[in-house]
Image (tube, rainbow, N blue to C red; front, top):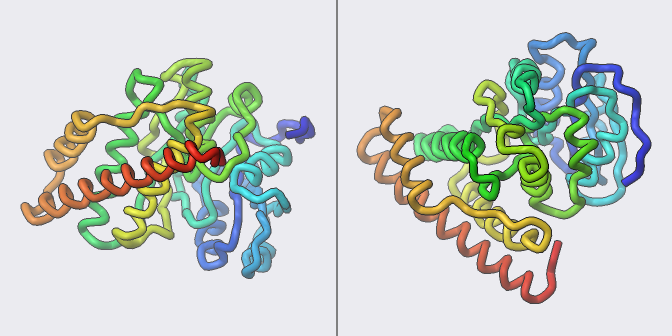
Length: 295
């Protein structure tokens, strides 16, 4: 992966891989440039991964550093951006996401805890439907539950809302350059090499995921997650949440909500479908692995 890197001259470097997301670029970059954080203390590095739309032309309008990475894949792009980074802390989001104004401040606060190496935050969906918002509430509760537990095998990662000390990347990185799952591989490497307490969920660290609007999008994402988990198991084995975990999370969400009876029923059915979609992806990923497909 190479050893070239910039000297540490800033508090935070934000790394954003970009691939054909022109429709979201403006919202993403404006959100990053309008953080409740001193502009002189952070930089934004956008890594273009071979976009064929007008993503690059849009990026050129803003005071962000643009890096080109020919190797395809968001993790290759992130590794490339990190080599150009001058921050003592690294922050990651995707170009179809818009961090809220307090995002960088929340990352800094989370990483100030003794022994803390990596923080991950709350991901809000852009979808406006009550059902999708209820599902989003469940997913946020699931992230908080899993990333505050003591079972390292259940930990996972998501680089659309992640922050870390540069020393964590230097010690446990780089990201494995594959199509999916390298964020979970990285987080699991951290908890295995340090402790579960080294990784935390920070609820004030919020991004809006602009792309996911429909229930079908959610089911497709669950399928991808299930498939990816099986395809990287030759690198890192993980343990999925069991039914009792999921039911406990579901119960806590509906207990703390004001959902109507209809919405509770709909949410329960939707989560059942999401588990089925995840399982189908797992079966397909297992079949691919058996055939020797390891990407």
